Length: 627
Image (tube, rainbow, N blue to C red):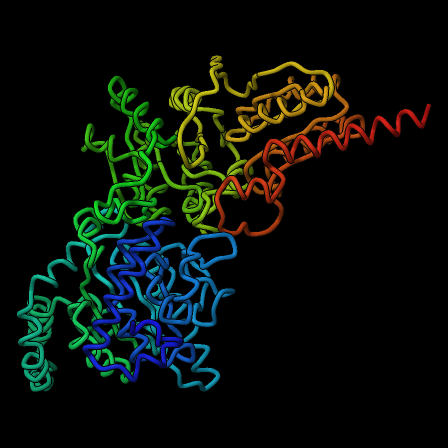
């Protein structure tokens, strides 16, 4: 196999075109084989194989900086840059990350996983090289979906204004995760369908050069020139921003792509090379259904069918309840940022297309847009993954909470998300939502409580967040009405009180069963509310138990346990009890399965039981000695 001879990108340069095409097929075969077993971002990575080969063939990485926006499409890059032998460890703990990771390889410039970022990085790196008088190249690969993000527009504007020496590769596959939406997506599709541009561009440029003297004579002539360019040059949008535009080119045709890249790379200043690729290229099921293979679960290669039948997720439970509520309340609208299927809102869109809005990869805009809907008396529900909602922090504060608008934030994938790793774990939302004035923060223990909390949220006039985890929805068989700011006692006990929130309630109940084996009887409280806290209940358990344990699937800093501790300190109760806070420490959580991560950080039922038992045993020994 040719792939066996590729240890670094430099090895590509000795291959001829036919060998490069064979290598492309081998890389696709390896990606399909590994992802079918491990899961991962299949469709986008298959679509960019040829582009990655061409870029590494034409560049001198890692001296030349190659940046990936998001990183969904970086599998071929990893394989080419010396990681083909270890690629079978994809997304495993201490294995190959599913995204670029600068701690993994010098070829990965950034650890990344969020969209619309790479152009900003590229300009910063390019300007640093200019100041340091370095001559290496700076190239960023950006998907057309990322162009819906404001950060990307800001960076394009800045690059064009400063004439920074960057090459932007616009990988246009008409999809971000779901099909790309918006005016710019339509514009790019018009470029693809207008090959006449590539035939007459040189003639047009020659004509306009001769036109320079004449056009100075009359504003009317200058307006005519701009109109003419706008009609014939589809890349005028990027040209007007200060970029030299090239394309569109077939992103799978190495015979054309490589000489084009060589020429464009040799130029100076801001350049944009527009290539057209197909998500899922080389694997028919992924070509036909690229959204299903965006973040694929393990599947059978021959059919593309998942190896396990997917169960109803919390997102689906939320979406179906939202549909039921929207049947009787026409004020309800739903908003997502390029994740209709992932959040379950594709179901809402099918039922209420006029009340559904996919704004593309633009989380800040999604929240600001929702505030406008709320201002006019509607009930907008914004469904965004926890890790991506971070990108809208200012809008949450300024556009929603400051206005005390009734926007509901459905925070999907709250907690760990397993193998996607540190860029995608939703472990910060408790901290960044609970500090916001006017915000009500809830976390359901199971699927029934998810439904009940959504119903309650729609009756409130203030902003509300509901966080729920990734994975299969379950029922804990005990359903009590949800009242604002009221927790529920799920189990009585006398030795320790465990106050759990959200997904950790199930773990707390399992922990209590383990403690029973040692004769330790734990009470279990389902907090339900991160904000406002059930202060009456917290006072009561402080007067009953000497040991209280809080459990949360989130970062401990500014987390739920911190809120409880702050309350006890404010009420001058912190000296009379021992409060143990269980959660994730002040570090980025690696990629591994959720089950393994909970064990690693002592958050599984048995680890928690051992910790509680050790504390109680130590206190009993101290008490006996003091006698």
